[in-house]
Image (cartoon, rainbow, N blue to C red; front, top):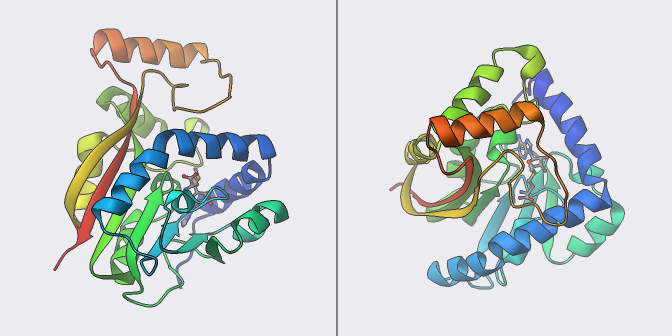
Length: 249
Ligand SMILES: C[S@@+](CC[C@H](N)C(=O)[O-])C[C@H]1O[C@@H](n2cnc3c(N)ncnc32)[C@H](O)[C@@H]1O
């Protein structure tokens, strides 16, 4: 049985509170529609989804991005399912079957899924090497993996990784940071990459594609954004990257 770290447990307490706030959940859902409604239609066509396609939505949150697919038997796994608001659970009832669990120990048998989707959740997890092994285990032969995550420009990724070394500066909910090439290599270590898309590109630390949210950038972040743009000549701060892969033979 996998034993989670204290840091992860603390982060998940915060995550539970987050999903219980209507405002945040509604805004996250609008963001998903803005970024993924059309893209998921293309993906389900390209990979021939049918009503029988079994789809795991790993780290689904209360938004459950897989509900934007029009087809498939959808299953959501998240550690805080029991903390979702009753009205959210009712809305998802009949659309997606939810189970409490983690990516480090996916509560399904080997080879159960045609597709595993994991959007904006990998960098929240505790042991991502374990998670990749688990995704591989629950996939059918030739199964499809759709992994989407925020990646950062090399300078910003360097700052994020450096801040991990100082307990006070750690971003408790995001232990992992990738640049786009690092994320590509991470995926390629377990799966065969089929396709890669930049879903969204942000220019500053408050430009994540959030909908209906007014954010202001703290001075320190403004300085980092400025250095990133004008000294390192990066036109972008973050890229939300979606990589589609196939299980290796
Ligand atoms: C930012 S939310 C994203 C939710 C949803 N995927 C979306 O795109 O809106 C990250 C989710 O990852 C979940 N999570 C964190 N650690 C996890 C783990 N070890 N295994 C599975 N899910 C995890 C959290 O509970 C949370 O719901």
